Image 1: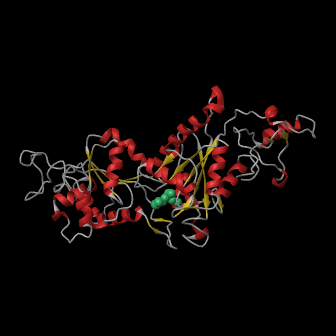
Image 2: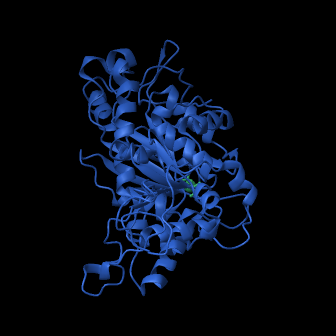
Image 3: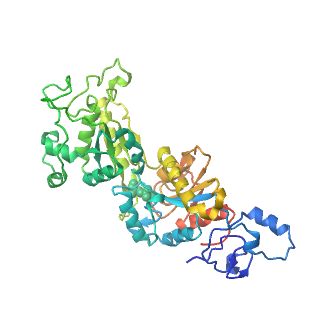
Length: 444
Ligand code: G3P
Ligand code: MG
């Protein structure tokens, strides 16, 4: 697959050679990672007779683990629509063969991690596992401890599927907009376009919805039962039914403490901080990614979940006379997601390298190369992120997705936090660039 010579002194089938220009090198069979940085090799070379050639086994520590790793975006880097981008499969296989750790870090979602990974493995023809896979809503799992027994609202492209993912994460009580619509069709008083979907996917609500005439709850029971209270709202991926979803989300942000069908008396109170908006125990709103655009089969980038978020925030500004919507946004470029991804990568790296690294372990992860196609998400996220353990994140922009020199602002936007460490043609070139930067000349 690759004739990349991983070390400066790779041993090839019993022969020895020092790396020179690529054309003089021979293929190296897959073997445990073994490399030294250029400077060390130079020192070794200087310490012996100049003409001497080196045996990898003698001169290079076969137990040394790489101190760097990769994080790959998926759409626009590894896949375009559903097809592998040329070089993607070879690149991942190459890294696997050489025990160089990587994670897949995508703003995609809507399917459970195990389902998505199985599909990716098939499409890319590379064995993959969930241990090095983070999608947009994967970090929602960290909120399970706090919310497992509460009631959450979820929405997404297929809200019922998002409910199943949420259950698999450990959230026990999960409500979708379709459940609410089925229980109280007056919540969205138009002829529903997706009536059949609601009917097919809705489940009975765990409690009744508070209904007038008072918009405020005094006693927290309706006919002796507690009314429906939503404790958090999660947008798992790109919703289809924006109108219904925006209505229900805004209803809940206006509610008293998350009781659907109520209206907080604090809303718009000028004497309160923030005029009382979102100041009455309303459920927090979580989005799983901020991408305004993403790369699809259409020749121009298409709206992503960020467009839905902008719509909710825009409606909220109109409702409140200009107030900003408080929400939390996971996914790239959020630092929460990069921190989460780094923890996943550390665990994965440890597992991958513990055997070849021996009893001292794989050592510190010094650098992660984030390879992405979207300056606003992949590049800005890596540039903004400050690792608590001092791992450096370097960004590499490819031209196979959302951004090209002619599109998405071209070269002119690559400034400040959007400026990548390198702009390269595709994922294979990105890895080559990174390997060279690590002092590992050769080709992939
Ligand atoms: O925002 C849409 C999503 O599919 C983008 O995925 O892999 O480019 O982060 P990715
Ligand atoms: Mg992408």
